[in-house]
Structures are given as C-alpha cells and as structure tokens.
Amino acid sequence: MSRDVLTVGSTMRISLLYQGEYSQWVERFMNYLEEQTDGEAMINSIKNGDQSLTRVTQVSIAGTTSTEQPPLKDKSMWSDQEKRVQKIDRLARSLLIQGLLNDIYSLIDNNKTTKDLWDALSRHMFGSKYGEQD
Image 1 (cartoon, rainbow, N blue to C red):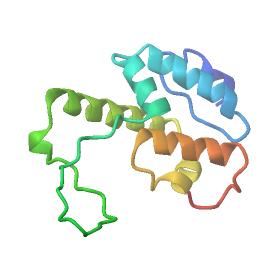
Image 2: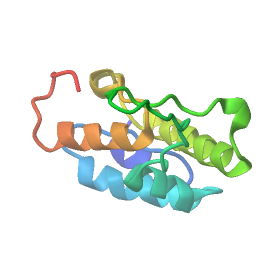
Image 3: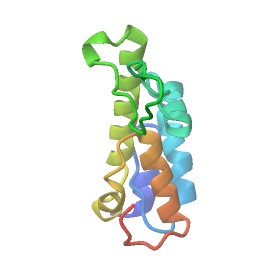
Image 4: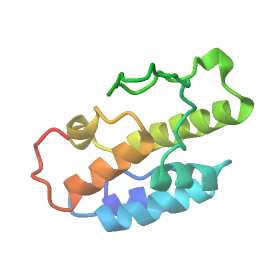
C-alpha cells in the first residue's frame, strides 16, 4: 500500500511514522489530535507534560536530609482534575504509540509519560543514533 494513501484523511486516523518523514508526521499527528475530544489538552500534555501529580508532604526532622522523592498521593485521594489530567495523558500516549512502527517504539518504550516519550522520539528522529535505547 502506498504511503500516500495512508496520509489521506490524516484527521480521521493516525498515520504511521516512517524514517525520514518525522516533520510531516508531526504535523499530521497534531492535526489529528486537534480534531479529537480534549485534543488541546492532549497537545498540552505532549508539549508540557502532565502537570506533575501532587506528592505527599513529608516533614523532615531537623538535621536529617533525604534525597528520595516523596511518594505520589494515592490514586484514591486524587481530585477529579488530577484524574482527568492523568486520563488525558494516558490517552495521548496511547494515540502516540499507535502512530509508531514497532522498530521505533521498541527503542523508546521505557518512557512513561507522553512528554517523555515525545521528547525521546524527537531525539531519535533528529540525530541520536538509531538503535540506542532511550
């Protein structure tokens, strides 16, 4: 099947990313997202991250130091807004993955947030050695 056929109607379905076509694919992918429910929020999640979730506040005892990140607030305690942000980020990540061929996705699949995945994809497509795990 011709790649031209795959790009027709790019607001109707996600086109696949092929090596050497990253810039065009980004444009089509963003156009696709704009047409989706919560499209602007998904684009924001890709570009700016998912606005970190609230972490549990920890009070330290004077004289002690900790380099550990405080734990995330338990999901059962999330506000409706926090739940919505996470749902949008998961959806955006899912849609992004659908546009990637397995050989590309397998190089960057250890990135958990949409923004991290997007940034890793950009690094790979713009010069990181293709084949290094990101």
